[in-house]
Image 1: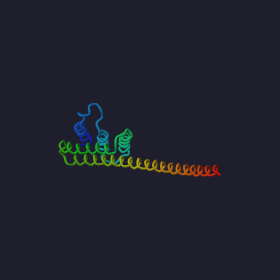
Image 2: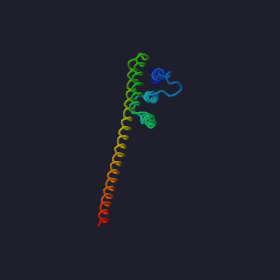
Image 3: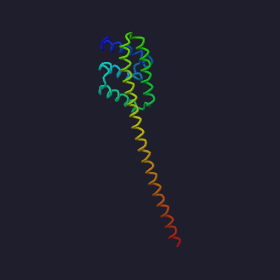
Length: 160
């Protein structure tokens, strides 16, 4: 099967893989993963920065809008699992199935990498915020200790 025919055959599976009936007019969870799969198939499975950038932007946007890392990964896993079932049923040629599986694996790995990088970045920001808070607390304790010693000194001076 030619690349164009394979992309068309996988495109037809979109509604089944994404379970669009359940979500109506909204983009179903994992739509960005399926779109990235189609882009990966169109470039022949090569690693292309455009694929990574578009998928990275989509995943980062979901995380920025409050989706959890677990939710994004679960959606990617659901798309992958449903795609494997649909591809096994729809494509007869094992070579075509392998091309789709390889592209889907590349996309899934990219999603996992983007989520991992976002989680590491968030952890670093959380750690920096925690360190700033600890520093502020230490400075506050020092100021309070100075005030306490000043009060004690002033009380002693006023008694004399």
